[in-house]
Image 1: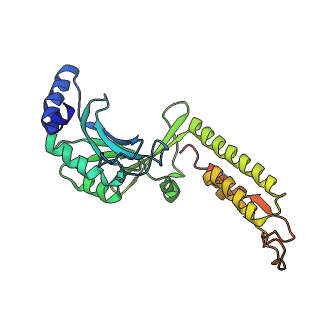
Image 2: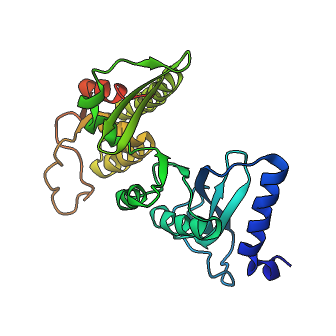
Image 3: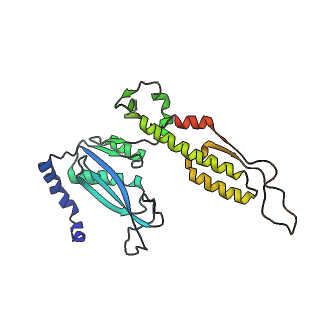
Length: 276
């Protein structure tokens, strides 16, 4: 039955929207747009949209489909789409802007999205639209460092007991820099926990005599540490001279120690932006 209803989906949403507005006073000036994925176990050969892609479910071994949804702050859905599992998030927004405008007409709306949704090109199109399409979107974390000179000297304004913010303009856009004490403590603790595990693993590698095994174990330790691994400087000794024929061909470490050191200035710089 759902397959039969699918072709009438746009016609069903319009009376539903009017009904929600009448019964619940639902408003449509603010729209929340996001995507998720659902994975399918097995080959899924009979599902054309089941493709391998970025897995939010931590199941990269399974095919998946991407589900995009537009809802009001009260949770009333206005549009949705099921897309192939390899669909890039940044390619979906333009289609939904056109879909909402076509079905519900032009209006002064505010779209709320996460940082992985829009491209700078689509944001420029939204600002240039008539009427303009407003938005609230998270910026890439790198933008904090790029704009620091513009907001560092501004005073913090308390929003809650543990949350403060700063405002500054850049062209037609208003930037909101937020700082959360709780989030700051959490991010610092997570990084330091990974660093501690990495440093403990590196100490254990000092006893390793085989260069190949050292590299394998080092790679595994850095993978577990993630971005925290960039905060440790690691120096590998050169391989020992080649062995004579008939001897073991396993490359061993030359005399000299395997050394590592914490990049303290880099750690301080990273913690400077925690909770922002």
